[in-house]
Amino acid sequence: METLDSEKTVHMDQMRLLSRAIDSFNCATFKFGKHYRQLEGRVKELKTEVSKKNDALKENLKEKEAIRTHLHNILESLTVGTVVVDLKGRITTFNRSAENITGLKSNEIVGKCFNDIMGIGFFENLQLDFDALVGSRDNQKLEAEISSEGKTPLHVTLSISPLTTPEGKKMGVVLALQDVTQMKRLEEQANRTSRLAAMGEMAAKIAHEIRNPLGSIQLFASTLAKDLEGTSDSKALAEHIASGVKSINNIISNLLLFIRPDQKTDFRIIDIHDSLKDSLFFSNHLIGSGETIEVVTRFASRPLPVRGDPELLKQTYLNLILNAIQAMPDGGNLTISTRKITTKDKNAHAAEIRFADTGCGISEADMPRVFDPFFTTKERGTGLGLPIVHNIIKLHGGTIDISSPKKDGMTCIITLPLWEGKNGTK
Image (tube, rainbow, N blue to C red):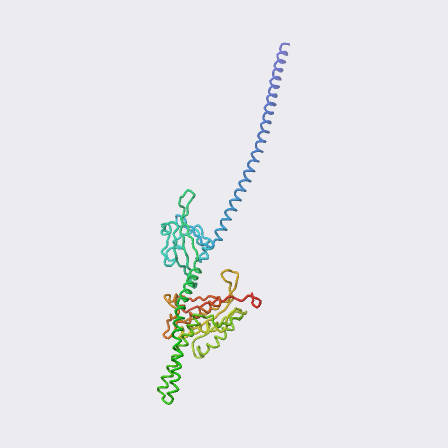
């Protein structure tokens, strides 16, 4: 009996222990579930925060990319060529204007050494390499020329500035290039016009002073020639005097035309090809069938109407054709071409007439003086031909430029504003 009671007691103790264990397990399970739910809520909060952070980061990156793109577009849209070189001498930035000015391609030179691409010899009359670039004083400005094969040299200004951080630490050098070729050309034209005006005023006074007694000399010479009928030698001398006076009068007439080409003008709407064809017809006897000069014409397929005086324009073309013929005593080619072009301001059009010969050309030293009156390289030239041409073209609102690349022939380019009124063509 005592054994049964003892076993019963042991069993009850075991049941109590099991019950307490189950209660403890249930309590732990409850706490674990509570903590799990708290952790799950925290995870959701963290996910929300991370999502917000990611959205903010994406928006920030998007804004920075937009700013970068905007700055890149500004850099590419600048008319000033921009070249950035780091302190190791590598080109890191090369915008579109720099490509247009130098003829180099950004994707081919970015990352390469400045000395290998744009070192000494790249800019004419300027010894510029990376050491000179880095060692130059702040915001220094230089002038140079860039020559490309088959193209007219470009005049450029170079501005050198340090590239620094906001704290003032130097990171590299910025080289700004600006094409000032057109500005130089306008300056030359302004100086040329000023010189011509001053010389023209002086020449007008001299011309009138000379012309006054010429009439009397020619009258006396003609009268003398009549009185010397029957004495051939003396009569011939008198006729030579009259001929010389006539030649001088012709020179003075050309001089007055140079001074005042606007006298007795007959402006009307004409096709430039008509005056050109007339000039070629009248110059045929100068070229001659047996000569070795070949004239090639490449005219625009459509009319190029301008408002001008056909006779003055004809004189201009004849003058240029005669110059080309005289520049080719041993023969050569004269190419006359026309085309329609867009002017610099992009809002108007012009007719371009180009005369290109293969003659002896003009030396670089003589080039600035070709439009000066009385300047000539010919033995019997008067030096008034090109000044007269210049004034006639200026009278028509056009421009004239002359180049002689590598002293091999000469190219004269005339531009005249196209008539784009009711009777004109767009």
